Amino acid sequence: MEDKNYSKGIFYILLFAAIILATVILKITSSFFIPLTLALMLSFVFYPFVKNLTKFRIPWIVGIILVVILAAVAFFIIGNLLVASCRTVLNAYPKYEARFTTVYSLIAEAFHIPFDENSSLIINLWNSLGVRTFVQNFALAASGYMFSTAKVILVIALFIVFFLIEIRGMKEKVKTAFPEERLNRKIMFIITKTIAEVTRYISIKFLISFFTGLLVFLFCFIVGLDFAIIWGFLAFILNFIPTFGSILSWVLTTGFAVLQFYPSFGKILYVGIAVLAVNFILGNIIEPRWEGSDLGISPFLILVSLSLWGWLWGFIGMILAVPILVIIKIICENIQILNPIGVLLGNKTNFNNRKRKFSLFNRKN
Image 1 (cartoon, rainbow, N blue to C red):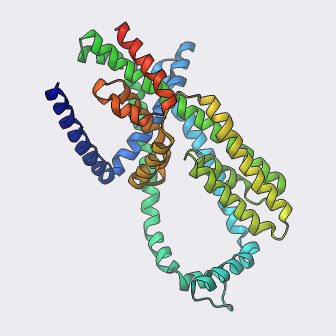
Image 2: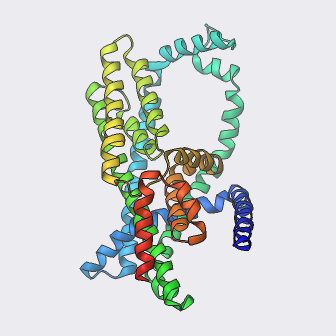
Image 3: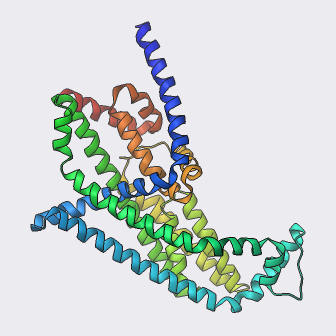
C-alpha cells in the first residue's frame, strides 16, 4: 500500500512538471496551436451537420465541403458588414470629435497629460500619447498582418476538412491500435463523450451569443444608438467569454450611449438597462437551464482557466478556455489515476452524478 501511494505521488509530481512544460511549449508555439485548436473546436461543431447530411445520401466529403463553404460565406458576410460599419464610424467621426475632445481634456487634466486647446483631438493624441509611433509601426505591419490572417484562415479551413475526414474512420483506427476490447471501449467512450459535450457547449454558447447580439442590435437600433451593428457584433463575440465578456460589452455600449445622448439620461438608461437585461436573462437564466448541470465545472476554475488561457493565447485563448477545460475534465474523469483532478475541476453538486455514471460504465465493461 505504501509503495502504491509513493508511486502515485511520483506520478503527480511528474504530471505537474509536464503541465508546466506543456504551458511553456503552448506559449512559445502559439502561432501553430491556436489555428489547430480552433480547427478542432469548429470541427466538433460541424461534425453533427456533416453527419446529418449523410442521411440525405450526400457523400461524407461533399458534406464536409458544403459545410465549410457555408461557414466561409457566413464569415465573408459578417466581415463585409463590419467593414461597412467601420466606414460609417470614420464618416461620422466629425460629429463626435467635439465630445471626444471634451472627454480627452478631462482625462488629460486628471493625469497631467499635455493638452493644446487650439489643436484638434487627433493632433493632441498624435503629439501626447505616442500615437505617431504606433501608427507608423501599424502601417508597416498592416500588409504582413493581413497576409498572415488570410493564411491562418486557410490553414484552419484545411485542418477542419482533413480532421472531419479522419474522424469518420476513428472507430476502426482505435480498434486496430488497441485490440483489447475493454481499453478500446473506454477510449471510444472518452472520444465520443468529448465530442458530444464540447459540441453541445459550443452550439448552445453560439446560439445564446447570437441571440444576445441580435437583441442588443435591435434595442440599440430602436433607441437610435449609432453603429448598432457594431454593438450587436461586440455583444455576440464577447459573450463567448464567461462573465467578463458580458460586462465589457455592457460598459462599451453604455459608455458610447453616454457619449451620444448626454444629457438625455432617458435614452442612456434605456440602453444600459436593455443591454444588462439581455445579458442577464440569456446568460444567467436561459443558458444555465439549457445547458443543465452537465458541464459541472467549478466557477472558480473557469475564472482561473480564463486568466491562464488569456495569458497564453490572448483573446482567442479566453474564448477557447471553457471548451478546453471541458475536454480536460472528461479525460480526467475517465482515467482512474486522474480521477482526483476530475473531482477538483468539478463542482460538488454534479460530481456524485458523474461518479455514478462512471461506475455504471465500468460495470458494463
